[in-house]
Length: 337
Image (cartoon, rainbow, N blue to C red; front, side):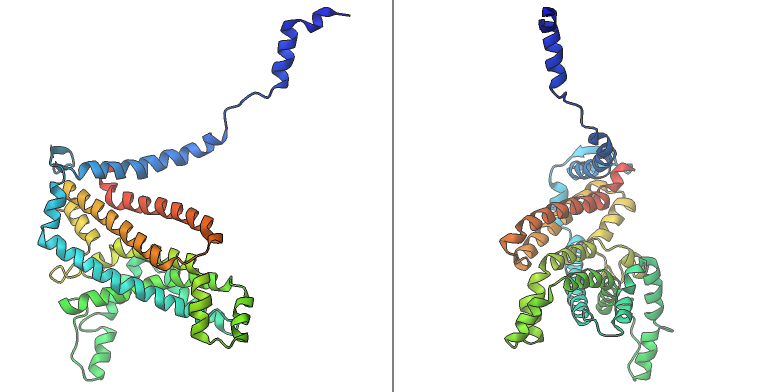
């Protein structure tokens, strides 16, 4: 027998070959581009915005003097900023609840399989494919004070013409109407899909005990679609707070700043007045405001059982990434220029 076969060196070699070697995970290379983009376009702008909000900046955006929280204090003492804050709250309260309620009712009414429902579903969801620019042009023609459709109808009915976009007490409601019209399509599709996924046995059980339409709506439909409802509410809330295109194209913040929202004021301070420190502070305040509203809404609207707790946890993580992404691009994009 060859004793050398059992030598220490050969035994060591055999043991090393038998033990699986640890390899560097190759999946990191696939995720690396996404991770780099996330840090470059999301984390870095957000952190840069926080830092910039503590300084006074030059016209080129360079930091000149550290002032701490004076930018925040100055904003809270600024009458124009407080007016914009009130305008934003009013705009959110006018658009978000109406969008959710109308979309939910339309989704409930068209969730049946009656003949012709496909036509109504197409009509109700059609606004989702309309851009802000196209929608603004369309509604600017309707709101035209001289040749607009609304004022022609008002004249036929014997009423005076209204400056839908030029009168201070009307402009905000006109902008809110356009916003609701443009956002209904997306909310409608999400809620319709959620309602269609509900098992019909739930409604059959309600029919046995004699429950009516509203009983089904509040006791069956809304509780079962609460995750989707909360998702739509969150997206609508973020969209309302970051609404910019409609304001810029229809009223430019007028008349007399009655339609100037926080995001539009932030844009003017950053890119027109070149006050990047103040604009960054406005972005952080708006971020905190949106996050606080979202947390309070979640406590009031999410009534899910323990079976869905894992789903809700994942949804919260997804929401946080979504919220940080929007905040970074809205409030920190100027820092990358």
